[in-house]
Length: 367
Image (cartoon, rainbow, N blue to C red; front, side, top):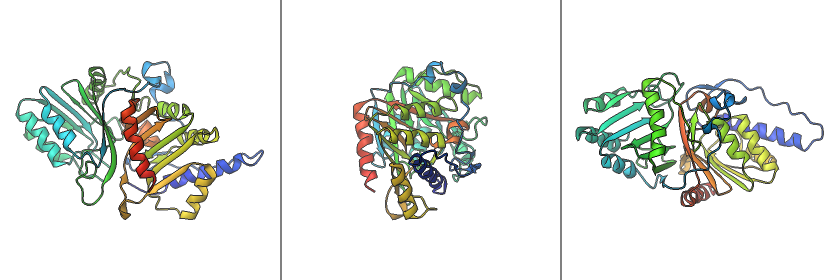
């Protein structure tokens, strides 16, 4: 988790673009964009639409913006803790499939081991080179010793940053949260804002199993569910479509803001009268005065929360548009996340789940 300059660079571009919008005939000259390493640990650039399956095949079913899932349960962290995850694992009768970036929370690991011991088929894939997270070898070995089928993720991706779980081919969890103490409310050092979606939907489970099986076998999945945002397939195009669909409001909580195309879409939304609010971690490399000037010029309210001063660390990846369609998942607003990683998120239209997102955001945006 880094809190360095990409967000500041984007805000600088916002300021330049908005100042140019106020000056007739101005043609903005943006700062030179260079390759950088973000918190996902992969080289990324802030400009240029990522290359994805939807870029070359926009008529595919998954490339159309979905209407969002209407049923399910939203768990807001850190309040929910690890119990919903552990209870779901304990409830498994036949199978568990888990693909995740980080797995260190002890109660979750014990529950997976216990499930394997009672005869449940348990498969776990972990990212072998998590940024700042150490090697998962010891965890994989421990799980394997308990009878879990455990392996590292598909090396075709710069990182497997997805966080999803499937129980008994019907119950799915899609999350911004890793299964760690800081994500699931049990850390005395850093406590994250996270969102976890649970859905009992055999069709959605089948689609996620298609992703899981393809990644397990190092093949390419054929996907059809437009409610899923999957990198490097449709996450970028659907994020832009979601922002462009806004008529009244956009709220976002994002650990990273490192893609010019997304920021341009947000600026365009603000210019057409949409109220745009964003909550991020603290911007450590820029002065308060400069940040305030940039935010005011853009008309976009950006609130940076400082976890070192007792606030939650914003690890969430969440968007709600017009209070009617939202997104939760693993996809950061960065070109690396859109284009290089395996990421998974889901669109949401359930009024109760959207209300939970809005309530948590309202608390966070107050700082």
